[in-house]
Length: 395
Picture (cartoon, rainbow, N blue to C red):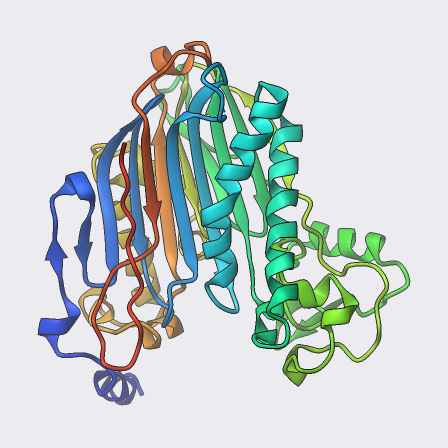
């Protein structure tokens, strides 16, 4: 059975000369087939490592790390911003978030002249409203935009405080040193909104008491209205505004019964963590990683190896697990091209943010090196698909 599957997949592979690329210095990140990675870099509060591997025809994961001013004012706070945007139904929403969320955050920080949960909540809301405006404007030309959405995980280090905001099922996990034993424990900092969790299903039932079918078990997977696994997102406008639950949207996305209140929410869960000297690092990653690795397993990989290459090492560990589940070799999985690769794993994005306690404790007004890096995929030539682009900006 496996050999037959491999024969089918081989027919989909590109020639090896087109498929594998290893270019660029690490200063600008590197590319290796479907993998893009930046093994090590500096942010205001320490070091970081970043990696993205593509599985879909078009990369639906987007991500960024910004370090420097968190507002448009010279007197505004400084710090580090991390964003992981796991798109679904297409890349449009995650790309939109990657282009707009941080700018909204800077604007609201400037207005309040400080970082706060209110600033973060307003930045999410403005991003949601902005994408809804795009869907409304293009409804007649591109109605399927109404069925595209994205998870949205954000981490902000500012003035010794770590803010974590989340929509969907991406995850932020802290590695915390236990001085008594020398172990580094995994502590999940983000709340998830996947209806596979009983607590999320209960929340959906409590917020939609008049709809007994708000969550449905379909093909052994819990889904909201039988369509989507997450209860909160940016986008997915067809499940938030009834006027988009109609033609010309494809029938498979439309819900038969009308609804008055939004089925999905765009309200992020936000937590505030005062950083301590024993807080070593934070792993930010899309669900594609956590599908194959446990929180503690991921923290152990980072802790037990050199910092450089941490994100790439996590991606490789996840891919090895994905290959093992399908009883195939990791080397064979790497040869499978995007699109077909989605049958084995999802797009995976990882950013590991190391925390230097001496730098973290500095006042938020202290300036440091400014850098901006967006993980938007690799550029692989094909004859049938438009390439995904990679952005790398440093200032």
